Length: 490
Ligand SMILES: [Zn+2]
Image (cartoon, rainbow, N blue to C red):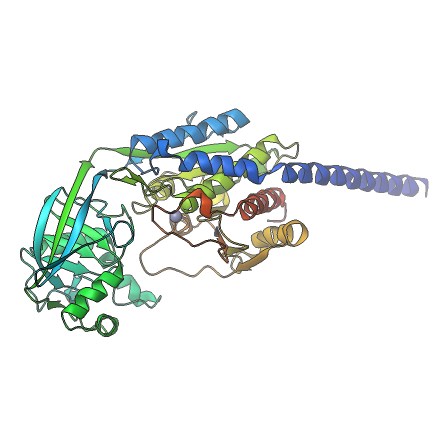
């Protein structure tokens, strides 16, 4: 009897103590949570979006300077280098500098119109240098796929001409059939196929500054706003939207435009075939002797769209915002008295805009065993809006629960989620390279944008960010990751 009472006393005291300890822990956790400030986050974004990094084009020396600045913050806060004593994980990353804005002039029966930058055209990020004037041929998606019974070039002669090209593929449904079209969805495939057919240059009917291309000697191109293509079609007596319907029906509606319609493109670029870029990797070792072997990865791409002829693409929302949120959460982890039981790896990813080079580098050369990696959360465009979207929550419900309860208890924003769906098309997110090697992934971005979203555009500046949502994103990240890191039931 005596022993029984003694035992229950011991148990109650233990429970009380752990209750007190838990409360103390919670107070300390909330202290770090409240220390995350939008002012600091905006300082990080201003730094990363500033002219000195020239839009953080992956492969450029300015990108490397931005990477070094991030590593210096890790070092300042006591976040350890994660790659054998180094904060950097390098990989090859050829790229081109756009030295001049060049020009694009459209002539219809002798009447010339100079297109306006950046509203109507952007220089081709990997165009060769030179000036070219030629007649036009519309080639739809520019795909030659004999095994799929499809050829955009079958009825047209593009030799020495400027082609008008669409992005993507005619097949858009996300099912296994789409996988057959994936190799044809890459910009670099389309460019090579155009050159193979003898095209001299190209107008890309999609105005995005996108280094995800390939350098081809002598091939000159520019991106134009689709409404310009619509005008060119109208001048040729064609209805652009009707032709796009034909494209969707896989009718390959290519045609040569009348000889009176011409385009002149001037471009000046410099190709750097041997450049390299890096991921920035910092870690906080877990505090539990066993669980510390497991890791949670928090990542987002550091690279942006660079500069064109001295015009900066600050790439503030895409994706200085994600990096700034990660830095803020990383600092909170490093400075808090509450230590995560599992280890946390922060990875600021390079080469995303070039075609997901940096995340592929990590997936091929992981710094922690993949089977010990519990979660990778990827932040991309997390800084303009009033609500959150966290992809993958319906697939990984245990992990998602930590983010949901953090939001419900302390943040109170709209939070939406979905299930991970296999992407059969061209992968567009760094998360896909982690998911493909078997790591559960979440993707976080903000929704209900407050300001216009200038995607891959010089107007993607810090003034189109909402500091409040950035602070809340970093707080959600901090509490959600802490929850996952300390969950012994996983
Ligand atoms: Zn992005």
